[in-house]
Image (cartoon, rainbow, N blue to C red; front, side, top):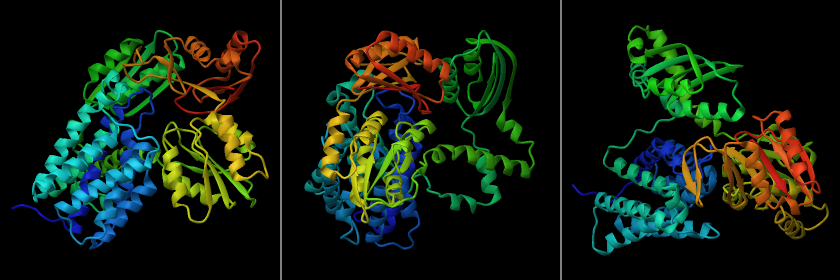
Length: 567
């Protein structure tokens, strides 16, 4: 029997199924990011965005359409993270603007909602690009309108056609964005939207992944927990002790750990000198052993079949392991909860400052510059609109300047500025933490908002930033071949240098940053870099650029070994 209208209850079920489908594929979507950096996070950002809305939808009791729409719109707007998450929230916002005026949704309303969703999302982006999630959304709205025009009323049929159209548009994204074609991937945001649509259709068909919250999980009976504990994604628990051929440097250690994390879960390792102990759950112990042999000789190897071992456990032991497994599963979500740190003296003033940053050293630097609140996030985990709003509320000032310090956080900051009712929020669109530092130094007490913002924008244009990290996979970008484990020097507009030797990578990166023309070079070293190694890089820069003042400071940032500015 054809479904020609959707009730609020059906919409709730379908939306929750869409959220779970996206969550199930977030790791794959993360891997579609063009740059092979360790913090590729489109899938995570989109998942956290939709889950923020899904939790509000799940909490509804006997909702009408207006209740459903409010939960989706408000939840996604406040939970939006990263550009992909903000655009997804704008798609939901546009659709719900139309849907909330109806008690039930038919084909014509769905088509109008899709059209409004696309329009709203395009307007939210300063410079819309084709070959992105916007292109996929536009294909969906055009197909929905076409279905209505040809007289189709069966919503299941329409959704099937929408998904097919979305997939065609997604497959074409590499033709619209050359950088996708060179990297051999489709647009990650568009892929996320396809997942949501597939989940929505599955929800309508009664095939969607069941949505549960932590509270609901806790209400499951012991038998359900036992069944859940006996489902294994990785079957073999593997423990390895080995003797390294030589002590590892930070890069080699990070590369090995990244590989081990990629082939299993519940990974743990200790490295003391040349002795390494590691344990993980995996489906291919042989791959792990082969990788280990590249670094040294094996001392001891133990492989256990977890399912077979489970059968001998007591009920109490099963419950304990279930609890442990749940804690491991929640690590990713816990890591996504950005901390809002109040570093102010708690004194009321006319103007306040919020910086998005990460690293204890960076926090101290911003504190000395007069920043009131730090939102931990940025490169490693984009903060949500709600995180930024909370930070703004903490500041004891009617005017609050916000510095995103990452191009993927600017849209969330601007969304927070629009939502904030109590304070005037001024977003200074800094794209790097070094621009954030320069912008703070440029602030003049007593100058107007317009004067300060104009001065900040002018000064950050003179800041060139380079960041040094490592590649998590083989790829090609702008004609440069990049291999897994390579060091990469990334500039304001892309890859500047790639290689096996971090010093050589930094020197090439500095050359391409035109450091010789700078007055000051500031080097911020990360938490995985020793002060001794950082001083060697400082000496290297001073010897190569004798007419430039070189400053060194501890940043404590993860993943990025060095963040360097030249101005």
